[in-house]
Image: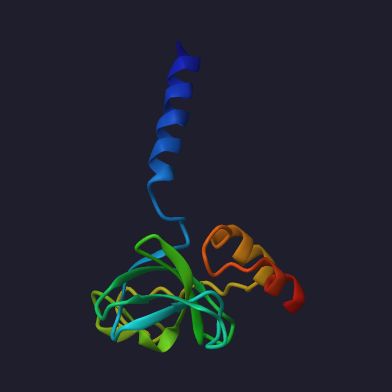
Length: 134
């Protein structure tokens, strides 16, 4: 009986976790202008979507320089300029201290892994470019 109960808890936990953001993701961050989502942390990377002003995003982390953040929005995963992200409840920039302030973790960008994981099969994913660049 105990093993059945434990198995049910494991299944329930897995189903719950599947529908939630990772523990380090921040919810409640929004854009203060229309904002390009790019395929990497820089303006040289492909623009893949545009988030409208006021769009809520999930932040997974930012580059060590705090200039670019890895985000998710409306089924897209990509990079945006951190200066245009604010905390929803506090109307403060992402990196400006305030009540309930949580600094996003630092993330390292790896072109190969990121593009293979999030963009394979998308129209802008070009394998020859990917190989020649790195």
